[in-house]
Amino acid sequence: MVMLGSIPIIEIKNLGVERGGTILLNIRSLSIQKGEILALIGPNGAGKTTLLQTLSYLLQPFQGELFFNGEKINSNHSIFEYRRRLAMVFQEPLLFDTTVFHNVASGLKIRGMKKGEIRDRVLEQLDRFGIEGLSDRSAKTLSGGEAQRTSLARAFAIQPELLLLDEPFASLDPPTRGSLIEDLEKVLSKTRTTTIFATHDRLEALNLSDRVAVMNGGKFLQIGSPGDVMNQPLDEFVASFVGVETILTGRVVRRDGGTFVASIESQEIEAVGDVHLGETVVLCIRPEHVTLSAQPHREATSARNVFAGKILKIAAFGPYQKIQLDCKFPLIAYVTHHSREELSLTEGKEVRASFKASAVTVIRKG
Image 1: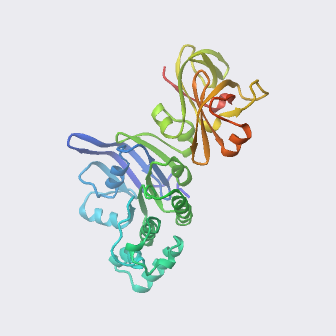
Image 2: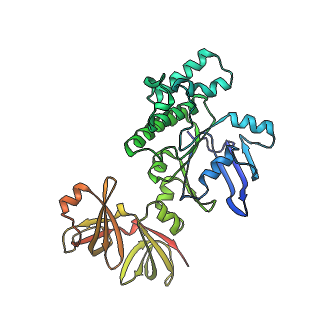
Image 3: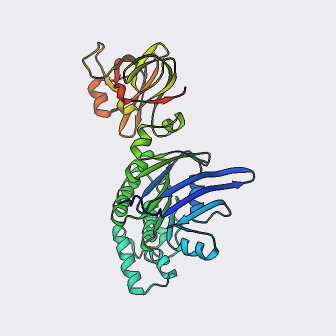
């Protein structure tokens, strides 16, 4: 459990990295509590890897201050002690040309632990990550998933106070990735290891993290709980990156208590929010909040927004079908494969699309 109100295990102040006149990282502040899991998401070049490399002191020099358990890291000795208390796992497993057992044991040997304790620690991690049967196998013979399991087992064997993960699942196939994420989630739940991990996959962030930080241009654009970031993005960039498929700009034309109506092209959309008449707003609609009906007439529904639409395109999207609609404004919906068949959805078909006013996220533009 995250210990709120205690001294942060990691605290950053005015962290900056510049190379060749280009600012790679510019973070004013960040505090991470013991036991917390923070996901870093953002496009390529956003600064995720740079931040992890800076936190691990693989990237030096940098500007700013870094505190570990309330103590400033500012000397070669304290850097050495700090690095012994963290572990980092990369996208590509970096394994020694030896057996799985000896790879997992390598950090413990460096720390001068006794053979019996090393054996117990290694066997525990091999079991946790389901690779006990690979103990005597050469690292050269491992599949990508097996190699990454070995890397994670090696990291957890030293019982790190801080774990840094740099997109460790990115190169794995979906079934292998899903299985490994599930096992890692169990291990983190048991060990409560403070973890910072970078990912492109918002579902990984949702499944594993206590907080999500959206990065771009070396900066944090938004930090919050997965629910807050996914459902209440602060701007269009964050919205698009966390899976909002429909982003529309309109003007407020009516208000009624806590709701308002915005004009979007030739249509009107009702949403919840405290806005002013004439104000420009951005409306964000997640595809899973859109309901489709094959009936051409308007049916009874609690949704305040109901539109006739034509299906322009249908594409597979993981477990869903992504439906691209023309409702006199562009709208994206997700349906299951079963729902597509049940509704007989085909490209060119006329349907009804609906979503609740409360399902619309409003970004005020002034």
